[in-house]
Every structure is written in structure tokens, then in C-alpha cells.
Image 1 (cartoon, rainbow, N blue to C red):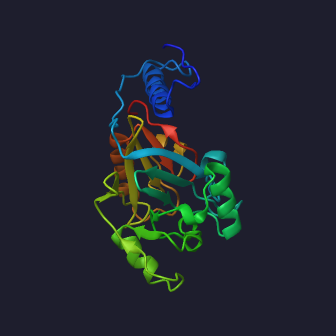
Image 2 (image 1 turned 90 degrees about the vertical axis):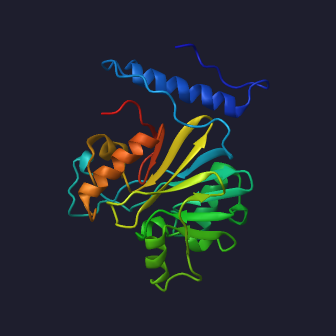
Length: 256
């Protein structure tokens, strides 16, 4: 693999990220990253001319209990936090799963990671109706509030929101696909988009963490584990990079 150099004044961020992402995918597929056996090479699946210009992780989530850390499923051992992502493109800034219960905390994390203020967010998408994924919805009163139809219906019945959540399907801003990924909940939806030549899926709790994805395991509270595994396989076919619900993003790599 050719060496990858940091961007300079003559190199655009998009070119650098596309070069980096393609190289990482190629390295992992070749099995050279961690001394693993060679795996089949897979070409990046994203389109280069996407209207999505960048994406940023705002908060890296964690689970309340994690079986891969030797923790019991029966009792929470820490406060849960979901992964929150900002997708930015031509005419929109779309925040996925606003995570912080406190408005000041949400504003601080957004500023720390992007330099933006809550008023700069034009839309918020909630992957499913579990409260840790919509804790921060109220902190964005100027934005559109969106979710898949089933999740929007459930959220609108809680009586805890100042206004309705808009049910959406298909394609948002001619750039982001709303993808049904049931299993964790029956109405769960993920978002898929292209950026810098890579296909990225903000998966929500369709997969909790990288470990759950690798083992094709559901978190303990999944309503339909069989559907959950099917959704993980579906995402694996779509994505070069995956942003899980309670972990940092990771490269999909070759299929297990």
C-alpha cells in the first residue's frame, strides 16, 4: 500500500478522506492490518458525486451493560449513551439520534466536534423510539424532527414532545436513504449515504457495537433477534463504513 500523507494546501479534505478510506478498506481486505489471513478484496461502494460533503461523530456511545466485557445482561452498570452523528450536505445539516439529555451538554458536544450551534441544525432523525436515542430532540426546536413511520407514531404518542415527529421514508435531501432495519425494534430505520466515495450507514441500534456486528448478535432487548441478524447482513451488503448505535464507527471489510 502506498503511504498516505496528511493533507496540505494543495489537497482537498474530500480527496484525502477518499484516498484514506479506500486504502484502509484495501488493507483490511488484504488481511495486512492485524496480521490476519488474507480476505477477499472489496471495492468501495460509495459514489463520488454525493451531495453529502462530510459527516462527524458528535458523541461516541456506550452500552449500559456489555456482554463482550464480561458484564451481565441483567443489570445496568453505567449510564447509557448513544452515538450521535451529523451528516452535512448541500442545504442541510442532519443530526442522527441526539444523545444528551441536558441542552448545555448537547450544545457543548456539537460545538466541540463541529463548531456549530443547535440553531445551525436543519433536521434531526431518530432511528427508533428508545428514549436514549431521542433524549436530545427538544434541544433543536428550529429543526425538522423526523423518524421512520412506526417510530414517529410511537414518539408522537408519548406526550413528551412539544410537536409531532414527521414520518419519513425513501430519500432525504436527495442524498440520504432511509433504510428499514427491524429487529432491535419493529420500526427501526437506519440511514445510508455516500461521502468521499464511500458508502456509510448510520445504523442506530440495528447493531449495538462492532463486537455485536462481528458476532451477528443482538442486544438483550431486541424484539426479534432473527430479523435483527437479517438487518445486520443487509447493512453489511450496503456499507463500507458503519456507525453503530453505541460505539465508534468501523470499516465493514470483507464479509464474515
